Length: 177
Image (cartoon, rainbow, N blue to C red; front, side):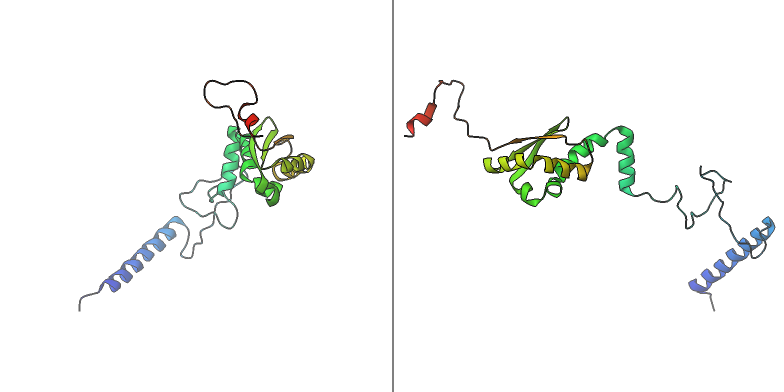
């Protein structure tokens, strides 16, 4: 009866195991030789080896979290201040609260001065009163020095100036009444 694929695979595995055991015995590992990982010092140096495993402890070969790599890269390249500036815009609702974020939005951040546009003049007044608390909340969320002061603007009025030529005076508003 001819041998089947599974029997051939078993025979090949047994032959490979015997060859491996003979190789270990010739190298001085004995028949029951146990592989031991190379102990590495703090600088990662040790005896060189072809294969191994990192074991339970942390090792440089272990996968690194993406956030840690991104923060290290941004620190090395000097991007950290610009990223914290961008976090003000990205995390605005989280930093100042949902109610304030509904009625105000950040427009620009230059040299620690945050310009905020409010929906109404009432909200602009309210934000001016809350300015210190808002700066403190942003500092608690992102760190000191990202926002040092705020400039708050109300809604912009529509412009009546149209076209390349303009006549000074009240314009169309004097025809309202």
